[in-house]
Image 1 (spheres, rainbow, N blue to C red):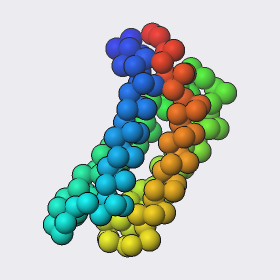
Image 2 (cartoon, helix red, strand yellow):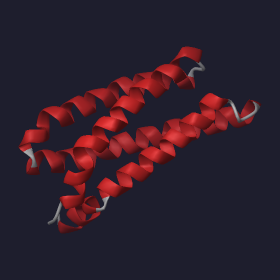
Image 3 (cartoon, helix red, strand yellow):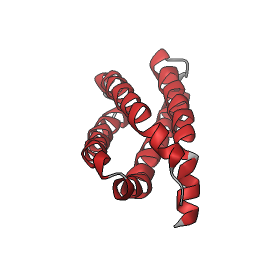
Image 4 (cartoon, one colour):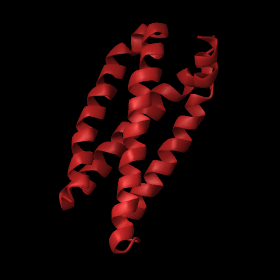
Length: 128
């Protein structure tokens, strides 16, 4: 368990970096800088990275935080619900729904801000 806590102790800072990378990828998709087939490739890369990030949070991060910080349980449950909503929007993006990318961007920004505001300091303080 100590290894997991050590990994999480840097996760707060990593969370900000991951969100920045995902925001940049999403901006590039929305700005249409990728032509034709490249767009599909970058869209899939973004969707895969986003789902992987949320799966890691749901499976590894949130259970540990919930055990250590019961006061965050309701917030963590809301974040997991957000992940389910975001997964639905990702399906729309993958199916080339033109509205889905804008909806995804709006939901993600609110979601990312909430995580950064409430979790970064907590994650950076985690110790085994």
